[in-house]
Amino acid sequence: MSHLTIRTLRPDDASQLLTFEQANRAWFERHIDPRPDDFYSPAGIAAHIGQFLQQHALGRLHPCVLLDEHGVLLGRANLKDIDVATGTAEVGYRIGQRQAGKGLATAALRHLIALAHDAWRLERLCAYAIDGNGASIRVLERCGFVLEAPVPQLAMVAGKAVDGHAYALDVRAAGLAPFPANDRVSSHDE
Image 1 (cartoon, rainbow, N blue to C red):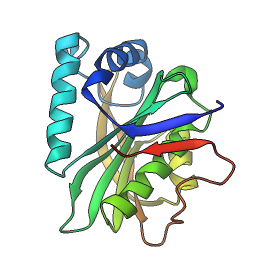
Image 2: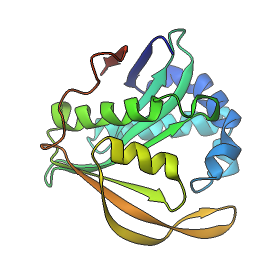
Image 3: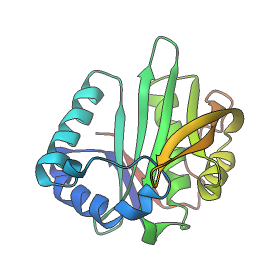
Image 4: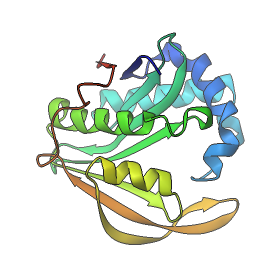
């Protein structure tokens, strides 16, 4: 990957987001709760984006997309359940199967940490990973998250309840440079 842009989700991302979600549906459902079938339609994606942007306007969510140098959507990253009063939020990210293992999840998570610190002035982030999802756990640990507690029945994967763990990060103690100097990432917070 020669260049990566991470920016806030926009309504005009609908077509690419639908393509991305459809192409990676089976991959995602191996690791997280499945989305309803009606999500995978132009109307479903438009409603999803509308809901996310409404929550963003209310200060409860910061949805982002990851784009390659050609503007192709490669993944998503979100600050969820933002609570400025308590200084907390949850992080989540989805990277396409063909882009897995290329450092995009780490870049996305570093971006969310920087957003939490710089834009939202948050103090603590939490994340959840199902047991056995070693790639996601490694990304969390690489970015400074620490294991907190087991979470029984964290998600439904292939119709079966799976356990997981909660992770946490003290944002103030985290390195505040969102990306190492050798990463070519531009961050747009629109």
